[in-house]
Length: 175
Image (cartoon, rainbow, N blue to C red):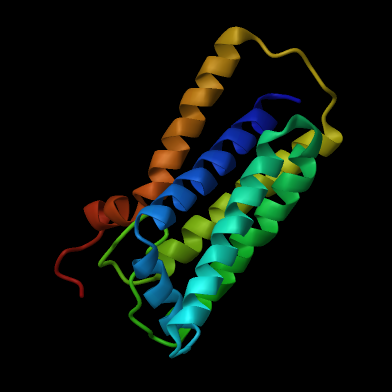
């Protein structure tokens, strides 16, 4: 395993665990967003889907973290993230103004920034899976590991606060 694989494993696991913790802290926001996205009127359906989503995210994070299952976990994370991107893109295309509850309560509706975020996370997972599959295992240096872990932590923060970063650099006069 080399630094790219370590970076992708830490970043993807961090994003998924943070998303799970956020969903567990505010499940009603996620339930209503999922129900609205799927046009399901019944709350129990939304509640079940939230539980399924939490289980999927936690399961993929566990696969990514465990060394023996990391390649499969990163492949599953790629599919999960690109699936999220497709789902969000469909919502954006339909011009639905549903808040993004990915990392806790939010007023920011799903938009292109969320599609880009999920595509990028999927690409990071795919790159990590490829690195594990095709790169020879090499010894990691402590300094390189520290830098990689810092980069992964910054990546998790960037993903979690992508709405705020986008708002910071977007034109306030445009609505």
